[in-house]
Image (cartoon, rainbow, N blue to C red; front, side, top):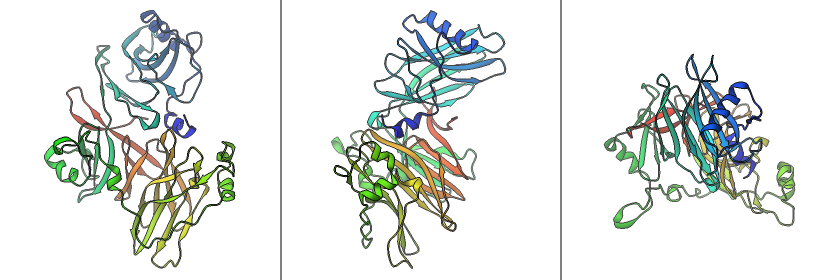
Length: 408
């Protein structure tokens, strides 16, 4: 898996703890787990949270084979994630909340941990999205209430509304609309079927039998705006320029004779008679490019390109222009699927560039009253200052949908 994809899962470090190492509290959990599941012999603690004054919630990974120390979690079919309550004052007292085996080629991320529930997502190669796994528990009763799976909702559109922004996404079985209203409490609301319909009607979905969508998947290709007429072609990037901007890619084997540099204009936005745009390119199998963004029109008589070092490795997947800044979502379009480079803010007055970390791939950007809002492949993000706060559509035990903050 490429380094950019691995960086999505930095929240789950494999600490160098096993049955023969780690803290006494960790060893107590591992010993209890091994006694209940003889098929597991190697363990690592993924996360420990103090959910009450009395208990820690411990999330651990168990495997029949030794696990290397890595920055990302391979949650395969032979490995299990287990949840345990452990008394803080008497760590030998441990209560199992259940365990779950993973999926083929699955890389896990802990999305949410609270005193009542935990959600773990699972991403496969080539952008394969497995179901979210959810544990609901009663800490006072020291027991699991329910463990179940549900398909995550990828938000793929963001429409301005009179109150804020309406996001439209899909879990590949249904279309979901979520309203963001910064003046409301809570600020997110999953719209009813009747309220959602006018917004859902604005997106294109794949056609299926008898006029029904085959999988209820939004057809992204049909919603992409063609490059505006009159916009000049991008200047050709030479190999020497590529090698200077991306020396690591050269070390990866992108040598002069076999490298194809193919760049195109990606997302764009009009402003005062001009056009802001981001560059995009495929970055794999010998094909590559140098990231950047540009402006044409208005008072400009020629195409202006901006190529700060922070964007060199990345394509632009979404763009939003405000009076004081240009916001760009960064993505690596590689052989194994896309991976996020976070967001980039370009200050239009000072020219200062600032990166905002965001592990999810952004497909649409918008702004509401000073807040940048992003539709992502995992839900929604709000950006204020230099920090992005992530949210996703969660499912309750009775099947209702709600928007909750990711706790990591």
